[in-house]
Length: 304
Image 1 (tube, rainbow, N blue to C red):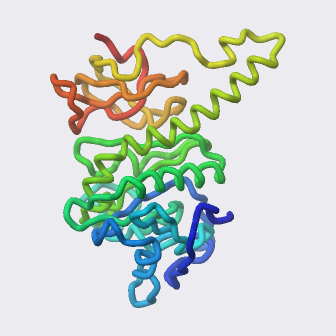
Image 2 (tube, one colour):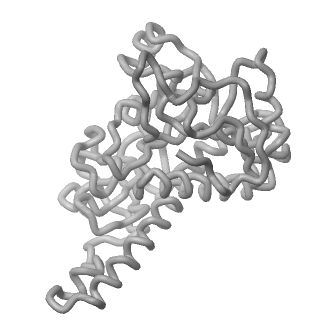
């Protein structure tokens, strides 16, 4: 696989595993993992990349994003970076449950270090937008059109780490799930839904254009059906009551990512798919709170 053309610099690290191979098995990319540097949010991408230029560091990433949004290639995408390690398999099983380590995550993940401050791990807006653009670029090159991220109240990442993406999906993971670390930090965590929404918005617009073009050229199919614009009962921003049930990693996922208890919720996104409503738990004032629904669900699970 080729590397991103969005890069403006290259500082290759000597720390990587060639061809994403382990015991003769070559892993395919289906994950993107953002990290925070906990240094300075104004660091350049080259300054971030230089941290991984020594073999003694024993760490690396695929890309580094500076505070101004510039991107540096650090480890080729065809190779596995050394970025998300931490807990051993036995520690993960004891602390988190029986699922993969951060080292295994990196065999099928593109890892991205983003310049951030130590205090609060604040990230510049330009860097966030650059990460969104890079994620879209990666997904397009790997034939993916749906970003998947599920947040759970215990924040241990079990739902997301265990999630098996559909062929069109790219899942997103956090370093903190594999190590006793704060990474990717509060700022990126607080902006994660924005990131996922912007990525999916890009692909949904592209899908809409394709569907609209099909509707225009079709002589045998109703245009409204082809354009995918059938009216939904609820719209983005509506406050609803989630009665409890399954949540999904994407609007067209075949298998649920988990079962969630009832709560108030806000619709953060809609899409004409199998599970048309992306919902997030809120309190009585309509403010987002952790726990509960944070994913796609069916109309049958919602009421007002």
